[in-house]
Image (cartoon, rainbow over the protein chains, first blue to last red):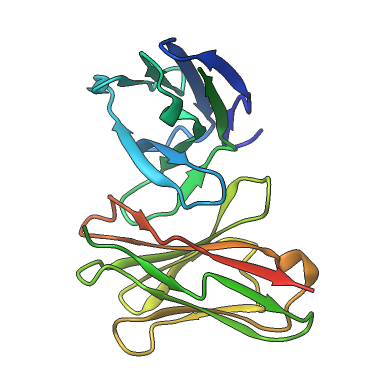
Length: 110
Length: 113
């Protein structure tokens, strides 16, 4: 089983739509969770951390379910500029390596 | 905003040659990493470096690879005797106190021909 699994997509949505991505992780010792965004041939950029209580940053909401080892990202009111690959990332402990999922590609159309 | 700088942005090398990829991490960061991404595939961990030594490495990071922090500011990845399958984007990252808040450099695209 892959350590971090994501649906690769692509998710094709119209502007203004709400879209949700899911991610599962296999290592129950994982302690920290993140969503990164990667544009084509660019470096991953941190979008947001994911907390057990759930957290929101503008149009983006992240949720973590430790019991099910499941992470989600919700994007409301999609913009054309949201088109990118969204990477689910887990880490066991501070200073340890990031383990990336394969990414979910989002394409927002006019 | 502080950034991680990588050079060169693109390097083409012949199979069997040695390459050195260079990174300047954010100045007060303590944790340093190399990751790679083969075209169309996921980002993969290579090695982490803390307190002037390797703290963790993946099975990809075999004897062909080495890292160095030669002068307290640069962080280098050396690939000896490059193979075609080493062609990838190589990302350097650094992290601050506690190791969270990683920042990635813009990457070096390595093409082995």
